[in-house]
Amino acid sequence: MRKVSDYAIQLREKQKVRRIYGMLEGQFRKYFEIAEGRKGVTGENLLQLLERRLDNTVYRLGFSCSRNQARQMIKHNHFLVNGRKVNIPSFMVSVNDIISLKEKSRKIDVVNESLAAVARRGIPSWLELDQDNYKATVKSLPDRQEITMPIQEQLIVELYSK
Image (cartoon, helix red, strand yellow):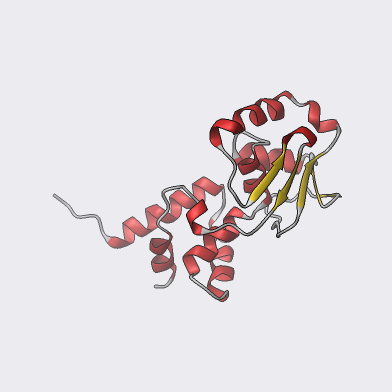
């Protein structure tokens, strides 16, 4: 029986995380470099940056069924951040940012179906949703404990540190 190398395991973990967040290698590497330059644990910084992307935040809030759908809705100008139009999925949300769905977009069936299903999926504690007004507030930055996906960020750090 052949043993899988550490490199292969690390590479698989990186590809899994890239696939979850829907990113290309170049984008992912830039996020890693930013995370590495910040104070604190690099792996946790990386996950925090990925979670703070607007497309991920829209998905986490339940305005869409997937990150890809959230990315498309952002590109099609359905969302406002602090009252301003934002059509860049990689936009970084900050504490106290208000994310809202445009008035015209509130009639979209997919959005309303997704919002109805958000009760089952749940919303992270770092976000606060006002479902009736189609608005949300970023209360704090995401903690590692709030990211429930089975990600071993240390493997990614080890891979890039070689």
